[in-house]
Length: 199
Image: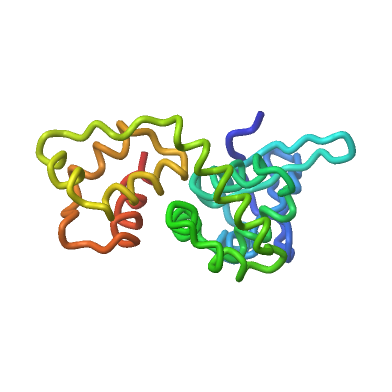
């Protein structure tokens, strides 16, 4: 319903902010780190939003980037993970690190997040990887195709970026601008997100 909200930051609390848009105050729940980095009260801010509707709860959840929003939407699609749990996870882990943990089956890393046990971590990885199985492998441009096919870390980076909701075409375009050979896996993802975030 709301793709994003842009207005004056009226209030910052530990778990939510209030943004004034032409006299209407929107209460938006956000991850702690996103609130801290949002700006100062009185400034114009832009927050990507998810309109959350349940029988006993209608709320707005906000994020500083599309990657955070995508991660939230993926998490609440996992059975047993609610909106509050997803926000807690986003307060503790970046989208790029989360995507890495999913593609590398790193249950131990996810269990370091408060409230996430081994069963929940395993379920998150299993359900999200199942969603990715239906997506085809990227069709790379000729100049990067050979390197991608021969590099496990680049293939993992592709999968991680797909976890965050980017299409094969978008990833292909960005990878042609990056010197993939000289970067480690997490650096490939971070560099790609810099380009993707501009779109």
